[in-house]
Image 1: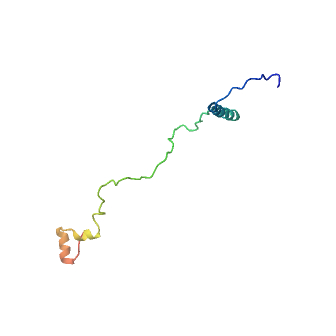
Image 2: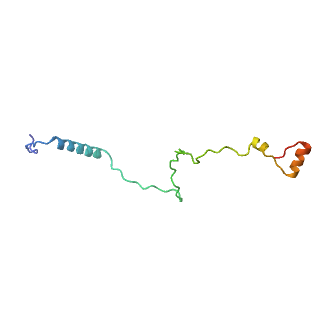
Image 3: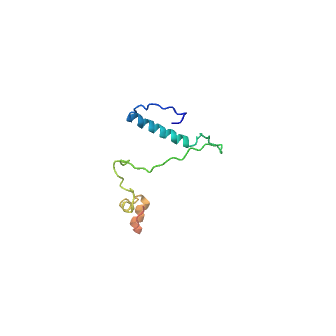
Amino acid sequence: LKWWVCPRKEQPVSSKMAGKDAKKASKVADAVKSSVSRKTKKIRSKVRFYRPKTLIKARDPKYPMKSVESRGDKMDKYRIIEYPVTTESAMKKIEEINTLVF
């Protein structure tokens, strides 16, 4: 024994306390090894503030916006032939020159 260490009776330590102390000691050891970090203030180099760009997700609809699907374009090449113009001048062309007007 060295003269500056006084001998003590060691008290029985429960296993729970030993585990807690070991965890605490390891935390303290990590803190001592690492340097102290201070918060730095962000230097603003621009006069205007621009909102940060955030995540923009693609649309993923759970149900269609319209309950019934559209039947496509109402006026197509076949529909035009069904309903030609029926004004007097158009009727004259149909009769005389055999020409449909749309």
